[in-house]
Image (cartoon, rainbow, N blue to C red; front, side, top):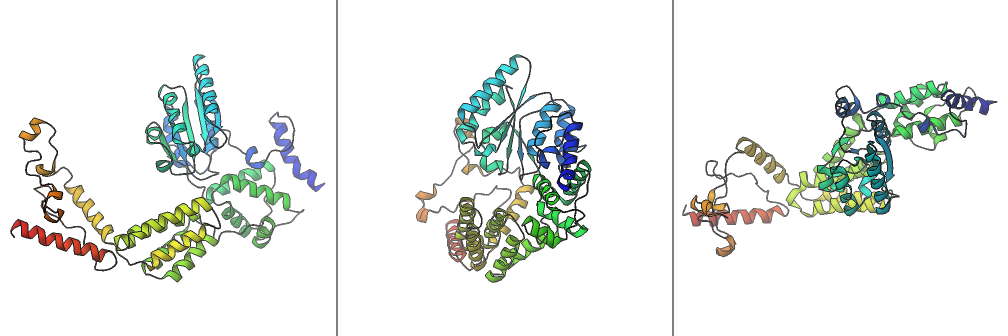
Length: 445
């Protein structure tokens, strides 16, 4: 009787929709939004002033790249966009498709266009296409054969061709926050005609377990309903036992996330590898994305170590690549190794400080022209105007150092970079001091 009652809402749902009552579809599929206003968690794109809302008001749609984590609605929004703009929706996956599949899709779109029907070509995992395959999209994007909507979980700046990016607008999809996940659960309960058998604390745990992924959230809810006996209400401990999944120790979108990453960064800056490893381990245990932590270690390498140890950036990047190659849990050790390296490296923020100072001066004097002697003079007119006159080729000068002034004349010489007398920057400081002496000698000052 209990099993029968559990399936009744599903059966009624399909009957109400006039669909054939076959095997029940998974809950995420049954609750897939039917219109763009039903999509939750992406108000910056689909809200009243959202980017896509504004596009649709003009009834025009350009090619787009959707960048965001799994389960945030990229595929659903692409399908609903096709409906809203009356385009034929065609979907391919870069994981399973090759050149032949692309050619077939392009040919079908051309034929469709001749009948007056446009095509929205949705390409899932578009970053998995190689450079040549990505280039094949350019002609059909340019002549309007397809409106390309590509979805990727990877940074488009690094994974997609510049030519492709220049023809498409990138829209960022955010992980669903707790409020958005709660909306999904409320909608699921309304459709299923029953409440999730959870106490208030367990419900909050289930929200955190979803980790910002709407698809995962509904899959977990379905597992809870499957597991519950009549009148049973789960506590947080029972929920974790039943789902065989630990709840994150903190909400990655809340204060706990920022507190721990701050503690990790400051432990590295304070040259305490043990504390740094402790916070690194805590964040992993809480379900933090290891690649997020790897990116933060790269930032530490350039902000807090800099040129005091140029290898820090190399090792931090190598750790990120090693994790990409190995995955979890094996790749986590590479990031841990990088954490220890940057924590024990000599520290310097000299480049960080110099870059900030240079940006400020550049902002204030951004229109100043470089001195003419360091400008090229490819034409006779430019030569007559003094371009390149008096330039000294440093390799022809003693010590390969001419001592010329390279700043705009009205700005005068500036000093931004002041390396400390430690680590590799001790050697850099010696070079700068040596060049400063030579410059004075050759200037006669």
